[in-house]
Length: 182
Length: 284
Image 1 (cartoon, each protein chain N blue to C red):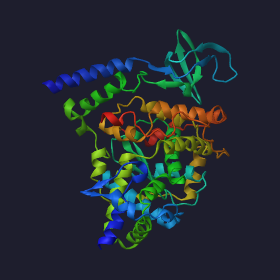
Image 2: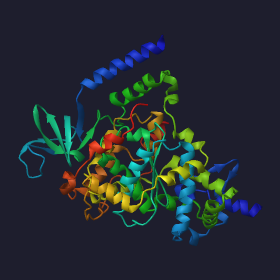
Image 3: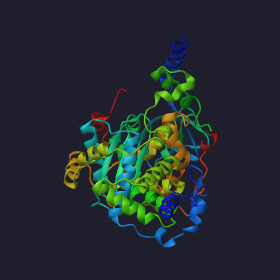
Image 4: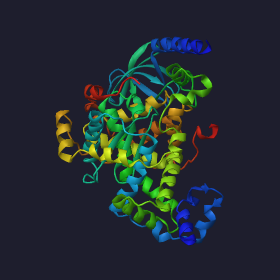
């Protein structure tokens, strides 16, 4: 009975979530452009932490609605989701609920719903030579790979690797945002 | 035997990372400090040894989750991956790609060209360009030998050469040994702990370039990272990924800082969503 109620709640939440458009927040001040081009007309300057409705992506641009205006912002100026510090708000919570719905397990044993290569399963892993043999059977030749790429219309490009930014605020930090709470 | 065992156990000491691995009641750091061998730690590892170690590590990952039993899907991922690897400085390495039958969301690389994505991750993707972005990130880990160096660093007290030799022998005659058992244990510790954050940022920087070189829209990788924001970091299927990688918003900022508008011109390259959807695993 309790299980049914949890399931119903999860499905109701899922249904309402599906009706929401995807939202995002600017992670820095950025321009809202009329077209997805750097030299396109600027419709507005969005300050950091502006909430936008995300419509679609095109290359490095995302089409968004902000304050009634529709335009394009750099995808890397945005974060998706609800923008809470740890990214674990409503949408993420819903993931957990859906997991319960999928597996029919109670909220306290949600772990039973996810199989394979969780931390626990990794800890118990032992080498599997049979699967290694299978893995090697799927290996493709360079010729096959080139034929495959041509069939998809892929064209190889010469592109230089990107240099490490002179100073990144992120580097050298060993702490995991979520590690402590596990 | 005692001395030998001590050397082997020392392979797992992790002084450089600031904490010790405790196997049973033995403090490995104490043994390690006696057996320091800097030369071995900085040795350039021959490809044969790199591949042998990688095979043992990959086999261990396959022990955590087997391959999806779908030859068409496995071949498809190998096609994409091998094409991408051809765009790199190691085109001739024999690269192996596999889809793990796991609902967890993650991807793994092991030395010598072994790369895995989980079925759970594939189900979240929407195009071949997104798959290419994920595989390119993992290919970068292999190119930069991130895992190999982490093991080498942790085994910097004389045992690495022995581990490498044993791995080569094990692959040819199936020999079992305490050293290999230690490598298996070290593998699990490494994948549970993750690489340094800088290694992950570097793999993102290189990954978007490798995808662009392969003719794909390189912004598909940041799109995948955007999507990770929607996962619950505490969900058991996502916890390992989140604990071993910088948070998505930091990864996106780092890509932004490095790329600026340098890759914009490649943003109109194909994503091949239709071809991906033909192979994408569905259902449960």
